[in-house]
Length: 298
Image 1 (cartoon, rainbow, N blue to C red):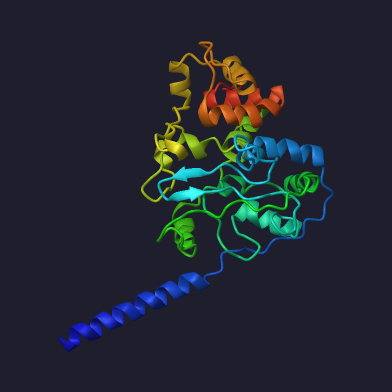
Image 2 (tube, helix red, strand yellow):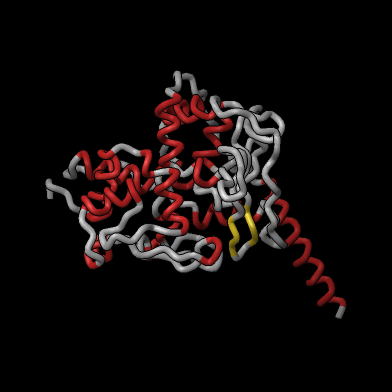
């Protein structure tokens, strides 16, 4: 009996020590100084494309732009996108451009804590320093709203942020945005947008029990979106079977109108209304070319 007790104590001590190691594990990588001048107009374009305004504004609740988003109800709890205005107390008014870069590209807060992956930071990892400078310049123009977003309502064990360090090690995949040789400029631009800043795979890819993306189910749709929604498959094969063409898809990303005359609803409707409808015709067409894999150089 005494040996069993000693063994249990030893295991408990080892477990506590292991937790301590993970808690102390630094995840923030050094960030070079963001020294270039930002273009606020281009930054606003990227913010629209990246869903910042759609996600961080509680439109239905009468919220002000970027002052905090509508609740995201998930199997892990309810997440509230935070205030991104220039408020020093409630928003990001006290941040530096380098802290902003670490948040976007690494998913790490100014305090060094990991963000929940409800924030699609893995898709922003390849944003350039110029992209960051442009986005930062755009966010500096947002009027301050001195009211913080509600705190996340997440129960144990998901409220233990240190556990996200293990999640990141298992499921934080870098975006595949590098140009592919032999493909057209339009196809590669679509790849950069779809796989990166517009983060289509965040909603259109299956997830496992831990909320990690199933890479083998990329773009095959998902039935467990926040709030109980579902997303359809958007593989080239699925889109063609659904009767989509490049022009149809580019038009839908602008207007929300599908080839059959119906309109996007739910979260995709918001993506179009607050995001892709503000993008250029060329970029929407590039996204459609990439998603349908219709490249003239093939």
